Image (cartoon, rainbow, N blue to C red):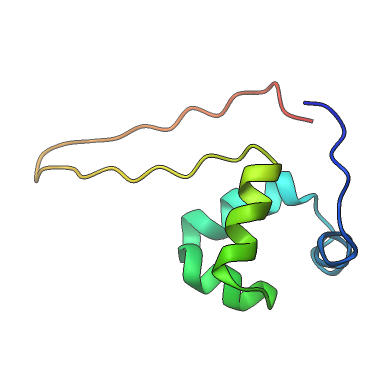
Length: 79
């Protein structure tokens, strides 16, 4: 992924959590959801959506039946 120019707020969040947004955002969103993540970071949902778009982070929603399973396999191509 090419270098992305990050805003001051993005850099502040990375400094506070001592992690890159590319790693931090998927974890927070998976654990807490979009709204709670935006609230925790002190930003609006629209700005969070912009960050995800800018960082090329996809958020998908999956509906599973009672006996269905879903497996996520992380790619090692990041960073």
